[in-house]
Image (cartoon, rainbow, N blue to C red):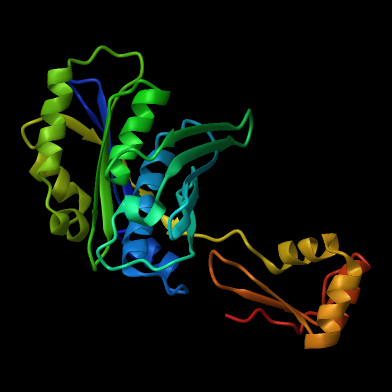
Length: 290
């Protein structure tokens, strides 16, 4: 695992503002490597991954968060799932031509941004905003102002080398001068893409805020993790009409189930399926095909 894939949280001593800096370069490559996405879609998934990691870090409980873009354009869906352990996965659905110079709006068309928070204990919550900003960061800043009334700035950077970003947010129920928050945002905006992606987080934070007093906490590892498994796919098979499954086996000799997130194939023959229907595990000799 790349040491770059870490999230750093920090607090300013004299201003009620929190910050997060994340580098997800390795995780991003894991998400896109098994897919033939156009470059603009790869970039957008990188931005979405950065944003989801930063938003996940604001959670104060165990649970999941899903950030998704959906619209009527050639990119009908782009989604990243993450949890409080900073385990993330993502996928996109492309239904049309996406030129190299495509923008967020030209890819998604008329659409919306949805953020779904699912605590392990408690009620699920979903916030939805129209895609009105020119960038993903602008759309997310709009979401925070509408849903939580918390001044928030997101600085997302991607390159061929990787993806990284910074979040600044006023602490809830704290009086913070707009001027102070804008000052920190102005400092943060000066970060260069290559600095944010290539340098250690502590170096970046020192370069940006060496005249400010800030406490930086121990980092958290960020990683790609798909929740698919052979057992889960077997459970799905049990819910399908038996005659449909039997017809596929008769025609193809097997059922091939494919995970959109990680690209793994789970293959089941007639013996496997018979074992699943009896409530046991399928044959141990069957292997997933990558």
